[in-house]
Image: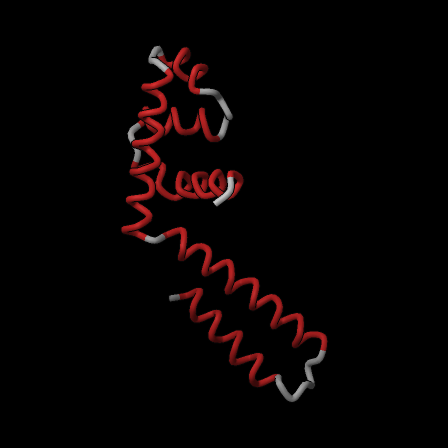
Length: 119
């Protein structure tokens, strides 16, 4: 995973599970990942060493990954986004040619993706 993907994953983890972190973990995680503050800047603000900030960030990241491994909300979110994209494409195909012989198959696929979204 490259740096932008890692940052995006951490942000998603935080979005889904931030309330499961302590107040201090949330605060430090947000300062580092959202506000782009360095470990030294956070340490100065919080009155702790940069190493302590790094330790808190590591524990927070581990905790967020643990929750996602157990609950799987990010995978469900990604699957839903995929289903929505597929529905949009199928609807565009259908709108562009509503009399196509494949119409029943397209409608069936749309129904299947909608069922996945509602599951």
